[in-house]
Length: 490
Ligand code: HEM
Image (cartoon, rainbow, N blue to C red; front, side, top):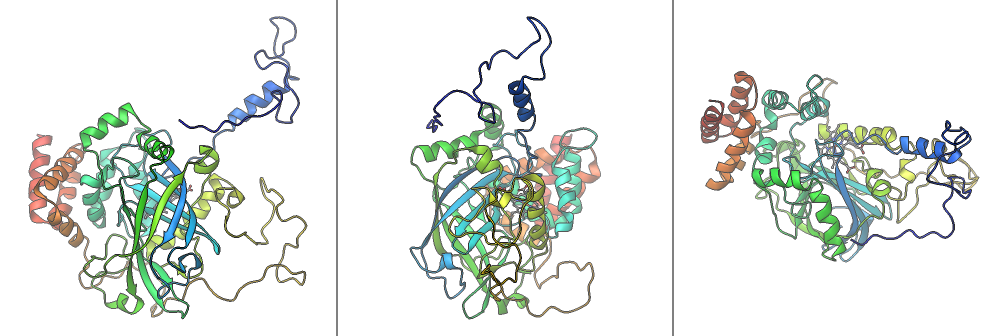
């Protein structure tokens, strides 16, 4: 283990810097008497200790991070004017935090769960955050369902445990989850480590070029280490033996100088294609088949530096899908739109109003020039500069150029409109395609994993409804799953 020593000169001190005479015995009134309030060191230590925790992330609480470099390998200027993507060979510092989703801070890494893949590019035009997962799709397609979904993944209010009834009740009543659940219970559902899995931006994002032309893009990060997964049995053992398996693997690989890397690609859809595309391109439960839009290689991502202090740099790191830079913006994906609000709100609650000023979070290749000031733990960085705009004292000014282009063709009244369906859209088509792509051995493991989970529900109607969704994806899938569940439920 390479641990940087923090060597200090001089004696132990209080928080205020006064030398400490005795760090073993608190001060008492006489030998064997009660403790005195004048023991500042004791009070300060106990009080500080009580405040060591901040709220954990409401999802993705458990994670590990590392710094690295993104290198552009292709000319993407026809598609985006983002400065950090302006020429092949250009490098940008990054910070990536991997995570599991459902487990609390102390949970084990080797579990069946999506993995977070949150990437911060410290660009010269501000930080660009791409907050993705290791899966190209998601369980739901509207942010209004997210808190309900996560409640079913977390502990039940009465039992205090995660409950298969809740998980399968929600999934079976949300048939749009069938694709992601098929993926999750397949081989890639438990990666062997954070290094041995792919990453995805998952949502569709907007790129716009210097001429103002719009493209819809999906990001792909293909692991150069190769995909490696754990079977359910291997994961059960590892989760018990080494709950920190993913975190340890990442840190130790970087310490050994084995820097993990990913080949970065994008699928690019010209804006004019979107309306008539066979799948709604803004539906997060669907992929764009590569035959329609091939993945074009654009860069290399390498992680090469461990954080020095996990709390400061990983626990307090913040990533927001709303952190865009010129040339990149959101799509009308309803999930993404909800996320544009949720993350900043979470950061203000979890880390505080000055979270953006912390070393891991602030821009590294430019500076933030806002008129926001003060609040808890404000460090006075703006000195005496004016704190309003417009001003005639040389303060920073707006550019007049939005980061992204407007979305055309919106019509109709306000309303709780469902995501529009395109020609081939339904909740099951891509889940069926995924199943049919699997080898026979992969199908067997998928069905065993699903049957093991579904057979734990207490009510037959929930199990039947869950099986029904997979049957809608593929008749063979449904038939085999039903038989496997029947056998386990007896
Ligand atoms: C509407 C749906 C969603 C909502 C409301 C939501 C909300 C949140 C919140 C509140 C956090 C904690 C943030 C923090 O405390 O710093 C979080 C973390 C995270 N979410 Fe989501 N999420 C949604 C969907 C997604 C999707 C679709 C993905 C991936 C494609 C994703 C990836 C992540 C990742 C990777 C993290 C951890 C970020 C980190 O490492 O700090 N989430 N999410």
